[in-house]
Length: 246
Image 1 (cartoon, one colour):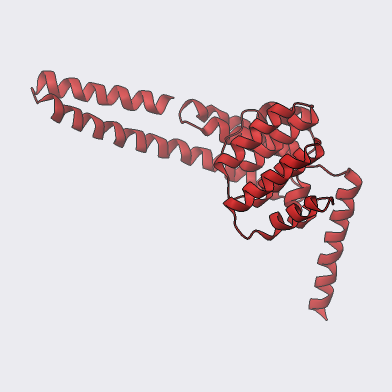
Image 2 (spheres, one colour):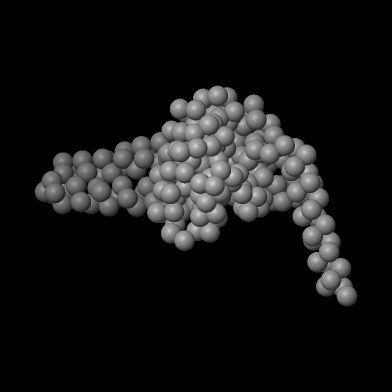
């Protein structure tokens, strides 16, 4: 990454000047060179991330527009990929966002290659990738992706339930219950995890709709079910407005 290379080059030059020209001891020279490395790296990293955040904010505004400007947001994020050469993890963060936008548009074919490059701490993108593997009948890949996701995002209730749901859908009820039990160890007292574990133990379906829109963004229910949910949500909002007006 350019920021590391520039910082390393500058600190090496300082080290050589201090030792060979100014004749300072090696350990003093090394300490000063390390300080120079840290200062330059932090400065360049901040400049890079400021540009990345500006692109993310612009894309976010496009997504919040009515109607959402999906393609414009994707173009903005793709342009921001140029900064991945400068800073670590920028590539994964931006690819996560692009993949999620395509996925939520139900453009799964275009979403997949971006989700494969997802940042491991973006649990939603990692979960979408795992679901994509499940739909492609790649159970081992699905499991390894979910395992990595829960390793870094262990406090996300939805992630544990989604992992269990996919395992149950793949025919492994015992593993699904084991996953929910692990989730409860990470998030003691989580009611949604408790309810889903009890449902599986009683031979019933998991109640994923308890997570609301978080659940529907993974498109694991039919399009008809999603439309019914959206209509019900709109009806609820209209009813609340009528109550307020009264």
